[in-house]
Length: 202
Image 1: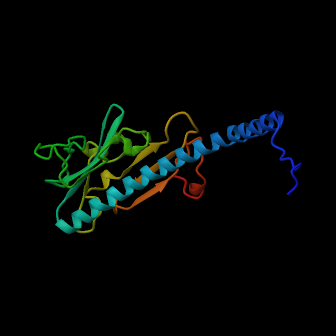
Image 2: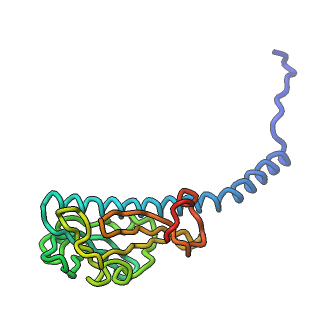
Image 3: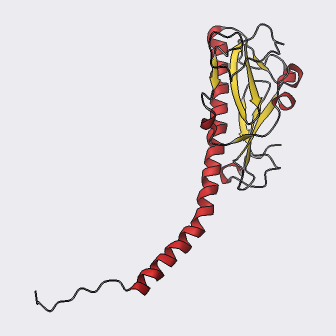
C-alpha cells in the first residue's frame, strides 16, 4: 500500500445532514409506535379479562359450585375477582384489591391483576354495576351445570380504553347468557383497531 494513501472521513456538514435526516425519520415514526403500543396494551388487557373469565367458568365446572365474578373499581385502580357464590342471585362481590387471604372478603378462587402496573395504563371505561349483572350489583354468577350465566339478567359487558394521550381506542368484552365471551370494538371508539374491523359491537 502506498504511503501517500489517504482515508477520507465525514465532513461536519455531511454528519449534520445525516443527523437531521435521522431526526425527521424518528419524529415521523414515533406517533405510529406510540399508537401501536396503546393498541397492544388494550388487546393484552382484553385478553387477560377473557382468560380470567374462562378460568372462572372452568372452576365452576370443576368444583360443581356456583362461582361469581365481579369487577372492583377504586379510583384509578380496578381488578377482577372470583369467589364461590352462595346462591344464583348472590350480589356480594369479593374484594379483588384485598391481598390478605385471611380476610373474609378475599377472592379465594382468583383475582387479577396482582399489581395495577399489569394493566399497562389501560383504563376501565364503564361502571360495572351498570353494564353487566345490573340486577345483581355488577356481580355475574356462573352456573356449574353448563358454565352459563345463572340468570339472563346478568348479561352485559366490560369496556376498556387505551391509555390517554393518543387515539380513542376501545374494546368491549361481551358476556352472553351462555357464558361466552366475545371481544368487539364499540362504534363509539374514535380510533380504529385494524384487527377488529370485522368485529364491531352491535
